[in-house]
Image (tube, rainbow, N blue to C red; front, side, top):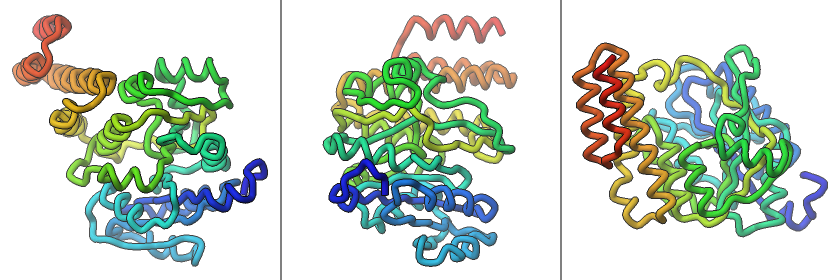
Length: 318
């Protein structure tokens, strides 16, 4: 446990780590090693094997009782994460993908913030992007306006709290994601977990719902985890499907946004408009100008904006 946590609070603060994996034999060991090496020990590590056909099970079982291994029929990462949280016995839950890893202070930084401010609704933080060779590309917070503001305010190794208005900006700019998310298991389950019918934007959909019911979130400015960038994921391998699914996933929240706070609804609207525009430009660049125009018309019907006319003109001009 971390030395500057009191013994009582350290014993009481139980963070479960859930790792979904599918055919991750080549990387799951690195992910597990990073969790087991945390300076603040996880209450438990749960690996949910989503129907792997490789040697994933054999690799995980080498860790013995230090890791809980469960297997399910292939149902996707959202279903695997949800199943893991249902099995968790900790009070808080953190997530890690099988091809990513934590830095040693990942859990400790959040544990310290929770001890000082136990009423935080959830916590997020900075993380690093690294390529397939492990080379550092950039960090997540410095790539967004809000992230840079927080880095300037709290320092590269600092931490702070964002309130409701900033939660809207957090949704719109997304300087953090699942690998640096920590929240109470109770809240996760109350929100229904990650939507299992989505292959794209399931994490953003959950974050929007989480922010809509939250008042305050903790932010750690020091990079605490690694996102391993590769070209095998759906977003990079099939960009048309990824862009189309992003629009569908965000529009699926339409029925919920009427009751959401104004700053959440505004951020969601901006995300939908951006998703439509990205899809339209992708279609236009791929030689499908008529489809691109149709998408922009759908965007205009969703929420009319002057920029839609400018975007239409840009596409028509090529």
